[in-house]
Length: 288
Image 1 (cartoon, one colour):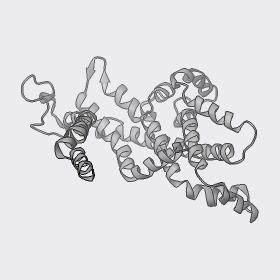
Image 2: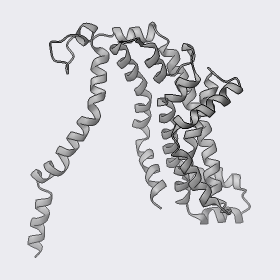
Image 3: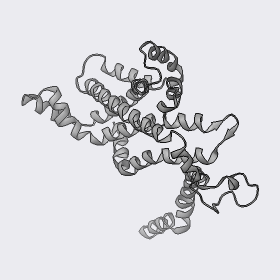
Image 4: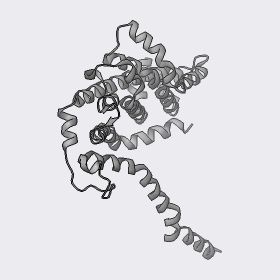
């Protein structure tokens, strides 16, 4: 009997079986996911004559050039767009995390009447498409004189960041034992001390996960940035690249891809350093 089981296990772990069930599907998935980035990279380094040529291999780079990067960095306002995007993303992420931490802690740990319903309502607010609420938000932005300023984006981005971050942190706070908080209350600690000295240090993976999520959405947001900002020096990267590098029906593909490539590097850099915290934060938020 044991011999038959061992033969069965050998069949499951044999090399042909692994190729069919693991390696080939993973290879196809990686190709589908990475090919757009490969195409973006080679387009950013291709000269215009290769981009418009009908001959040659379109999937390969023959004569690389930095002309598109030179045009992007020194003949457009791209460095300013990059700085605007960085300021807006960091500020909106900080505001969203601060609000979400307070909301998630009060809903999960204070145990007041209707807390569960409020938590579900906050999550349902995340399901509302931003394209629906940007019209009333535009009216508010105009009334307060924030149009065409970075502050307009900093204050409106949390409307779609806070709901999901709150829901994520609620699940992570739920996984922290209540006994730790009860012992601190017995020792005379205040709620603020418990939050800052006990809950937050234990919830660092959840905070990093929510922060990466908020930063990524802020960095790539397009609708609000297109609606609330008009001048070139105030635009963010997603809006600036599309509006400034497309002239009528003429698409400057090399500069467009160079801008997209440079714009994706900060997010990729953050993910590469915090991917383990991001995964643990996501799993910690849904395991209960």
